Each structure stands twice: as C-alpha cells, then as structure tokens.
Length: 264
DNA sequence: ATGGCATTCCGTGAATGA
Image 1 (cartoon, rainbow, N blue to C red):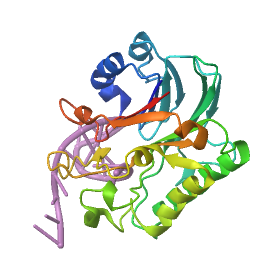
Image 2 (cartoon, rainbow, N blue to C red):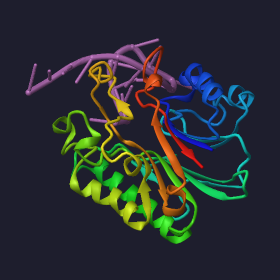
Image 3 (tube, helix red, strand yellow):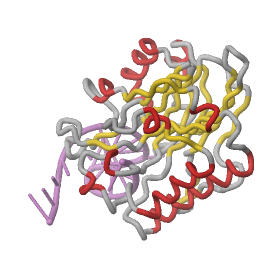
C-alpha cells in the first residue's frame, strides 16, 4: 500500500499536476495540505473520476486539508476533538483524521497535519505553532496508544537537524528550526512515533520543500519539513519512503513535493 | 545585506507562506 503526503499549495491550481500523478503512481491514501478552498470549490469531479474518495477539513482562501483514498474511510475526525484551533479570531482547518482498512483487514488511523508555519521564535505566531503541537500530542494521548496502527503525516514545518537542510545556517534559529520547536516535534517521537524516512535512510540527503522566492529548487537548496511518522508496529512495515523530486519541476509545481511511503 | 515567487480575493495591492 502506498501512503502519500503533499502540500499542494491550492488544490484547484494543482489539478493539472495532481490528476496525472494519481493516475501514474496510484497511491492508495493521499493526504493533501493547503487546499485553499471551501468544500463548494473543491474539485470533487476530477478526483473522484480518478478513482478516489475524499474527506475534507476545508476553509476559504487559507489552509485546508483533505484525504483522498482508493478505499472508503471507516471513520472520520474533522479537526481537533479537544482543542479550538483558532488564530486571530479565525478558525483554522489544519487537521483531519481518517480510519482505513487494508486488504488484510488491518485498520490504520491516518492523521493529516498542516502545522502552522509560525514566525520568528518569541512571536505570537510562533506561540500558536507551539500550542498547535501541544494540542496535537494531547489529542493522541487521550484518544490513541503508541501500540495502535497510526500514520501521522503532513507539512510539519520543522527541520530536525542540519542533514535536513542544504543551508542550515540560513534557516537555523528561524521559524522552522529552534530548540523549543524541536522539543515539540521530539515529544511526538517520545510518545511513540518514528520518523520513517530518517530511520530507513540515516544518512540520506533529500528535501521536501524548495523556496519559490529564492529559486531554491534551481539552487538545489531545500528543507525536509514534510514527514511520514508512524507508531512502532506501523513503522516496521514501511519498506521505502520516496521524495518525488520530479513533481517540483515542470509546469506550475507546488513548492512542496509529494512524500510517498510503501507500507507492506 | 536584500530580495526574489506563488496564491487568493466583492482584488486592482495586501496578506500569507517558510
């Protein structure tokens, strides 16, 4: 089974890249972030015609997450159950969970996250990001066990260490990499998640995002900020994780590329 | 040291992103 995560930076704009990719790779479960549209605006027709069911936590203009799947979900949780995800008085659509049963009858909980980007450490936006991580861990602590089959994926907006950045000096100490933020990420690992890519490939240098503004892709200057995390029993079944670098090239790419895991 | 590109909207520049 293939499980993918992709920050598409507008699902409507990305349809000409998304549909051929779905048809070619045939991922079984696809978690999208930054769909940037309401449910009414969502391109159901094209995606359903490609053979996918859709669940949504949608929002006008900003954020928004979706899970596409070749099988129907058994259950859905839209957003947080135990926290009000609001920033500057506006409700944010950044979290969506679905439960899926594979051919062998195993049910997996898939948690799709679009973590706030934040801002320089110490700012209000940075605090919202740290609070978001706390709320996510709280949800899991209440409603799940590290022995469950769980895959937590998405744009987690943090790079773990120097190996996850081409120019760590550019990004170190900024919105995506400082000690307090990494403590929050590490708390997920401590709870029981495994960074599947890094555990499969301890030395591999691969990035999931390249800045549009500084022509990061052309300079091969990226960050690994999109992740597939899994609990122990599930992590042990991942045989491969691939960054789809070709999707960053060509016409109208997202600034993020799809990360695809092969689950046996 | 700076800015650069892409996306959205009751838009014609501002806000947001990482």
